[in-house]
Amino acid sequence: MSSSPVEHRFGPYGGRYVPETLVPALDELEAAWVQARSDPGYERELSGLLRDYAGRPTPLYLAPRISEEVGRTVYFKREDLMHTGSHKLNNALGQCLLARRMGKKRIIAETGAGQHGVATATCCALFDLECVVYMGTEDVRRQKPNVERMELLGAKVVGVEAGARTLKEAVSEAIRDWVTNVGDSHYVIGSAVGPAPYPAIVRDLQRVLGDEARAQVIDHAGRLPDRVIACVGGGSNAIGTFCAFVADTEVEIIGVEAAGDGIDSGRHGAPLATGARGILHGSMSAVLQDEDGQILEAHSISAGLDYPGSGPQLAHLRDEGRVRFEAVTDEEAVVAFKKVCRLEGIVPALESSHAVAWLLANPGGELDVLTLSGRGDKDLAEVLSR
Ligand SMILES: *Cc1c(COP(=O)(O)O)cnc(C)c1O
Image (cartoon, rainbow, N blue to C red; front, side, top):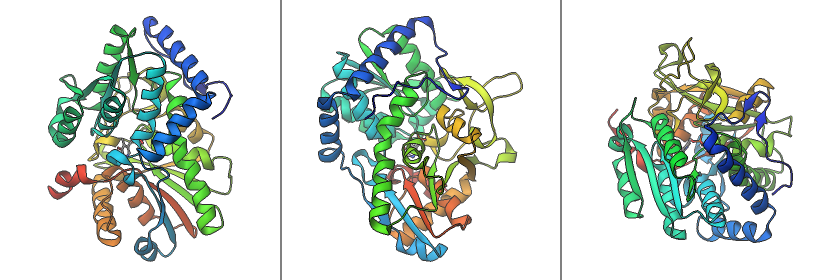
């Protein structure tokens, strides 16, 4: 990992829009991170766990029947094969190790679909840390099996009744807990969002994914891909993937957001494709908001993309013209989900299915790399009810 300073701003985005009481905690976290990432002991322990516990490196898989279907070569980066079923564990492991170094015995997390909650509860079991997970009660209802998993792993799941009772409210409640218990608690944020230094930390913990994919595609195909594609909720699997390719100017980079019922319906989760600049959960980025700056609710069939905010670095890469953002509807995502099941024998997460749907509809060059961010076991009920 690098010795460069931790970025607080990405162009105009990012920053720290938080209550005074959190500033010392964010400074402490940043100092701990700077120290950890240059400590070979931390690096060794994390990479050992990523290999032996989590299953890294994940394969880069040439998807033969999807390739045949679209008439070009498509590689899937198989984060669905990670322990706990998604890329989330890369971040949770790194942050829980960091919490242990800081002497924090209590972990706070938020979760939407439950994937980040499960990843964090898993790490807390492994490191013997107390774990409290905030989850909107609507998501508790939609994602029952993940609630049961978290409880089996020893976490306390706290239902949040406010607002739409989904991810946005869960994050707000987790931040509130952290403000109150900042002395003994670390907040493990689940995506590349939030006040500095979180977006930079989460990106650095997820970039293992993109670094592996870049080396693997060169190894398998002898060249860089024409396009790199990933779905975008808060943006952690996307920024983790894209980082490795940003300097390769010949590679086109596409982030795929949730168009929900359709962009024109207003019921979607596509702040980067459509949204204006605003502040949510401690940082400035592209957010869904009304004319008065009130944050709007997001809508997506996929709980992991059902968030009105976005990572600040992605917003900056968009403005610079380096990453393009597109959006895919619920319906298109479900069609792609079923297609990947039938053509590849892989049940993808609904989130990842958004990226696949875009790829299926948009012929491009000859070689694409797509991050399959997770597996879809959690989504069966949702898909089968359609
Ligand atoms: C949480 C999740 C996402 C969305 O989060 P990002 O931070 O945007 O990566 C995407 N895919 C899966 C499988 C997830 O669990």
